[in-house]
Image (cartoon, rainbow, N blue to C red):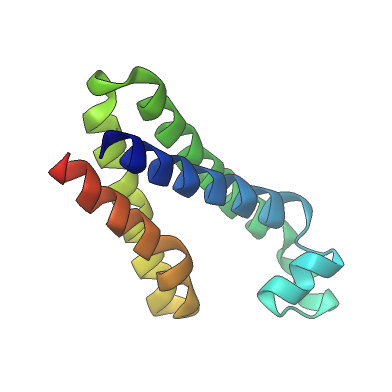
Length: 118
């Protein structure tokens, strides 16, 4: 169970690295425009905000990686950062798109559940 849980936590961390790349570097590129359904004008106007948002996703990924590197002593760190991901995913689902709930919050909720059971 520990291995599966840690693999899922690693997947959540990698998703947030991907979000960082999308928001910080690809926001106004074809993949970013398609992913977020943006017009080039809106992407250009909101590029700095997206980069800031991407940086926060990087912090979530770093926190999860930190917890994974610590092993058992990282339990509380994993709980904290997974909870942050869940809150961010729920907020995003309520304010931006319901899709965020499934892409961001659900994997973190499953990982959080497995972690508390392990």
